[in-house]
Length: 223
Length: 126
Image (cartoon, rainbow over the protein chains, first blue to last red):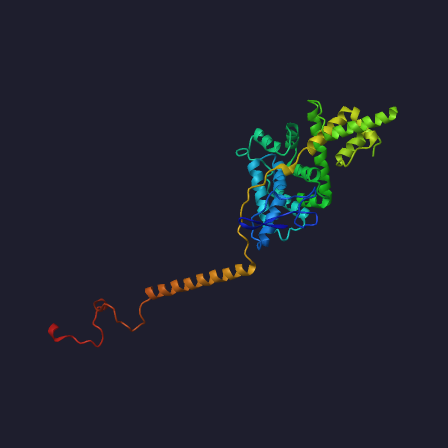
C-alpha cells in the first residue's frame, strides 16, 4: 500500500500482490484504478475496501452466469454476499477461500425456480451476459443447464477453483462435487456441439492453435 | 482409456485443456469436424470473462456491535422497561386503591347513610 497526499489529505493506493493475504487474484495482480479516499487510521475500512475491490466484479460476473443473466437478481445476490463478506473481511483473509465463500453464498441464495412474473426476457438476459462475453449459442447451452451445473461450470472451467473450493461453493462432498463438475462440462460440450451443427464451427484461439500444430506436424513430415 | 485419437482429444477437452494438445491429437482434430465443434465449444467457454462484469452496488451496512456492547444494551433496555413497568404499576395502584381502612377523611359523609360515630347533632336541627 502506498500513501499519497492529495488535496483532501492522505489517501491510500491499494496494490495487491501474491504475497498480500487480502488479494483475490489467481490470474495476476490487481491494481486499483485510483486512490481510495480512506483515513489512514481506518485500517478496518482499508481492509474492507480492499476486499470489495478484489472480489466485487468477478463475484457479480459469477452471479450473472448462475442466474442466467438476471441482472437485478445477480446484482442483489452479489451485493448481499459482498456486504456479508466485508463484515467478515478480517476472518476471510485467504483470497481463494474468501472467493469460494462468497460464491457459495450467492449460490445458496439463488432461487432454483424462475419467477415468471418478474423474470427478465431472453433478450434482456442475453444482453446482460453479452457483457461478460457469452454469445447466443453459449447462452442457449447455459440455459439448458441447472443452476448448480452453471455454478460448477463457472467455478471449475472459468475461474479455475481448486477441488476444495468447488466443494465449498457447491456445498457438497468431494465425490459429488467432482461428479457435478464433470457432468456440467460434459453437458455443456454435448449441447454446445449439437447447437454448432446448425452453423459452421467458429475458430477461436484453441481452434487456431490446433490448426497451427497440425500444420507444423505436416510440414515437418513433408521434409 | 481408449487409444482412439477422437476419444482422447475429447477427454483432453473435458478434463480442462492445459497447454497444447499432443501432436497426434491436434492432427486428428484439425481434420475432424466433430472435434472442431468441441474446440469451438471450448473457445466459447474460454471467451467468457467474469471479471468484465461491473462492480455490484455497494450496500453500506452498519458495523456489528461487539458482544459486550450488545449485552450492555440489552441490560439497559430491560432495566428501563422494568423500572417503567414498576412505576406504572405503582401509580395505578395509588389511583385505584382507596385510603387505609378506618380513615374516612375525604369521604362524602352523606353517602354513609348515618352520621359518623361520635359526631354531635347541632341543636338547630332538633
